[in-house]
Image (cartoon, rainbow, N blue to C red; front, side, top):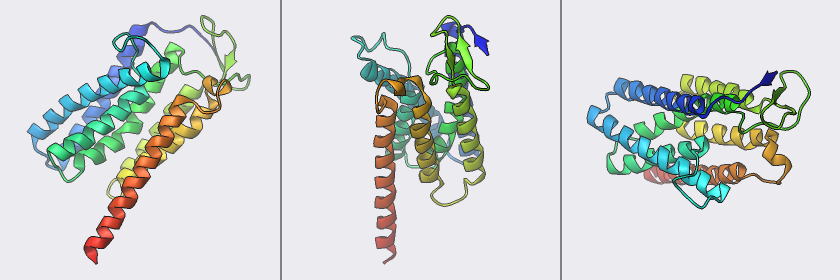
Amino acid sequence: MILHKSPIWVYNLIIVISVIIGMVYIYLSLKKDKCEYKKIYLFFITYVVFAFVFGKLYTFIISGNNSFWKSGLSSYGGLIGVLIASIVFEKIHPTNSKIIKYTALSLPLVYSGTKVACFLAGCCYGIPYNGIFSVTYVDGLNISLFPIQIVETISFLAIFIVCNSLKKIKGITYITLIVTILTKLFLDMLRYDHLRILITPNQIASIGLLVIVIAVYIYNFAKSLLNKA
């Protein structure tokens, strides 16, 4: 498959659409669970601010740019920011962890959409590959590459569909986060950046997130056992 990189506005538009789809999912889920409208709207303000700040901060850190404001938006950094936003908001305006739960469930959905933007923009591309479905960006490296962005889109969309169908299961928040992070961690091995360094910044961030999520799960599980004792 031979492609030309799409204009930056196409990339930004798809990112925005993906975020809006995720917010719609959260809104409908919270509405169904009869969460207060005021809390939902306040959360979305927090959601957008954290997504923007962490999206830029992530790029600023891993790219070594001299300017925070000139740094691009990282979809992965934005998703980390959204997750942090849900945790912070839950502490300020408790909703029995509903916001954290539905935010976690929405992350693979949003991320699957952002990878479509990456595929069209020719960024976050895969390792050299000459097999079926290989892609060549004639205004990029101009070599056959593995379509990792499409694989990520399909993988994370599948995670969303499966986890959303199991959303009534206890601990689905942790299950979704762990599966999403592990998938990101391993799929990053098929990205071009992995050829130059042993562990990519995305993988380092994924490992850190995984440790935190598992630690929080163990803490909460132990706390619940003590409360029952």
